[in-house]
Length: 134
Image (cartoon, rainbow, N blue to C red; front, side, top):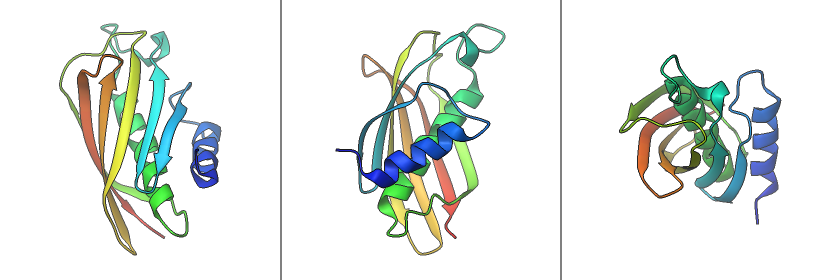
C-alpha cells in the first residue's frame, strides 16, 4: 500500500512545471521510495541517450518522496545539494527503477541516496541529495 502522503507528494511533483513524465510509484515505506519510469525521446540529449538532467530530476523527485514519507510532518524539504554519477549510458525506451533511501533525517536536514537501475537490475546512475526541512 502506498501511503497517502507519498501519493500527495507525487501529485505535487507531477503538477510542477519541471518533471519527468510517466513516473509511477512502485513502493513507499518510511524512508524509502521506489518509482518506475520508461524513458522516451523527450528525455534524450544530442547523442540520443538519456540526458543528465533527467537523472538529476529523478534523484530529486524520488528522494523527496522518501524524505516526505519519513518525516512526521511530511515536509518535502528544499534541496541544498545534489550530485549525479552516471555509471553507464542510458538508452531511450529503458524501463528504469529508481530507489531512494533516507540516510539520515533530523529536525532541519535530511540526506538521501538514490539508485537508478534498468529493468534488468543493471546500475545506471547513483546520486545523493541533501535537503533543508522547514
